[in-house]
Image (cartoon, rainbow over all chains, first blue to last red):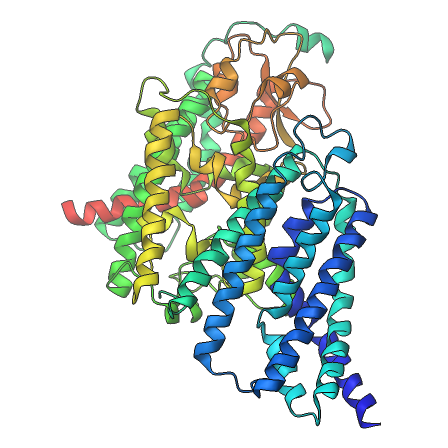
Length: 220
Length: 387
């Protein structure tokens, strides 16, 4: 009974903090989705890979943090280091994504088959999975809230179940992103998406390096 | 209507009569007086009244010349460059008087004591929609206007004028337009058309990052005009890095590239607010159209456009690109009067001067309301040192 109650609580927590989750994942998700082919199928495929990898990230973090006893009380210094490393990796994947889509529209964008990430379908899925995993490991505020609550549970299995229910609640907020598939793709959309990815990657890279060096995020 | 369009003269029309031009200028003169604060009960010191009189005469004279010569761009440019130069002078002076420094610390920003700027408007929307929170709680020095009033005013004017805002109300674009006017010819002529997409990418990235970080990301990291308004009160290395980014972007996009290309490069290749304004060109009733029956594609209009808003393809379609700022440079440059001001829903080249007048009255009223008061403030600052 207590298990069901904690799952219900995690689901509600996920639903309530969904907007914060999509805000945190938006800079990664929106441009990379816009660089996908038009249509709902590629978007469902991309989002499925992204969310599955994000769940994996959640679970990995929960297991490791539980074992280390750091689910609720990670010290600021290692937290900064971990976020710095994730930001640098995110920047790397985003830059690779932006670069690998360079040939997408080389000959013509009138044929939607030509508009894809690189030359293969697997590259899009791999990219989505990499981004999903890294955003899953990103210590955003809702994730930390879920971590603190999960740490109060009796066992690792219960904590994992809590995270899974929390993931389900937040994931419902990602469903509307499929509608980005309705936006027609052309040279302009693809170029804008690639440039935006590069800009966001530069931001993550600078923030990541600053965090790895132990600097604050603000210079004010 | 079609007959009238065909009978438009190919050469530029003769100047309007002085009396008729004065009559057309009269409403603008009255509006200038009102906006400069000349109303019963108003109190001025000597410097303020001199600045207000000079600004009224300046704005009225420019409008008179627009009426008399049928030309828009060159007179608008004088106003716009003056605005761009005088804005930092008045603004920095006010900042130093109020705060003692141009540097803004984070606590001042959080407390909403940052002067309001229109640049973060696109970045406010998503955080406000999700959390009903303003991530840039800017305010006015007079504290008589709320941010909602300013945003409402911007929206009303933008719905009518579209991206005309960037040519008649923006107080940032004047410096680069002035720099672009200095060299006799462009040193760099081949410009990659894909650069037009950069403002949209900056807009997308900054809107998403602003939502994620809950701060106006553009103002924190990329605004070139921080270099001449209020910079980061740097308290550590990262603050220094932010200021270096602002200065480099200002030097590159506002000084060096406009000089080399004779274009408004910051507006064309970077400004996310400009990209956001472009969307409203779809709604605005005013647009520029190319009368295909008169156009012999000489591309003078494309060369004259300061914002890269004309391409061979768009000229062939008889229209400008979405990024058109309605500055009138292309109209003035066309030797065959093929490019005209146009009101949506009417036939192309149907009474273009009437469409121009309808746009210019609104645009100039806006220019006086925002730009005129800023020019007067800048003049007053200079006069304070002189008188």
